Length: 133
Image (cartoon, rainbow, N blue to C red; front, side, top):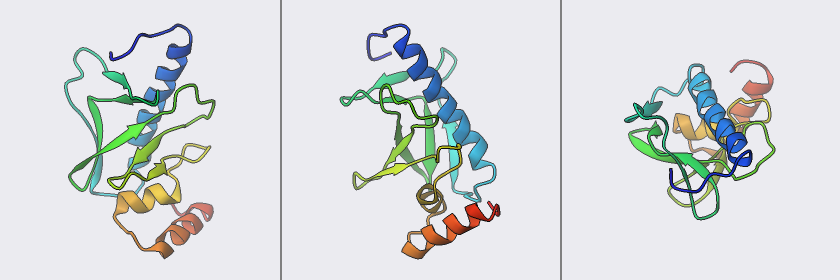
């Protein structure tokens, strides 16, 4: 633990963070992104939840690995959204991981699949709306 926990606030924040990581695992099963996986490190003594300089929470011993690279995920402190998780890209951009319903956003699917063409976001969004994904 890298910060002083305050009850009940941090019970809710950390529970939601764990729910988001669990949702990644479920969503990856149907994402058609073979080069993406959720990898756990040493979790024998629990999940190591840390807080960054902006107050965001992350789990340091469970990682999303995409094309061999560990990705940085974080949840904003005190968010009221159901799935408030963000991925920070190498160039500092943020990708919203989930829609309000807990599905990967089109931008996240494009990132996971490695397709960086701009039209791909539109195609993925249309497939989501048609129930194909």
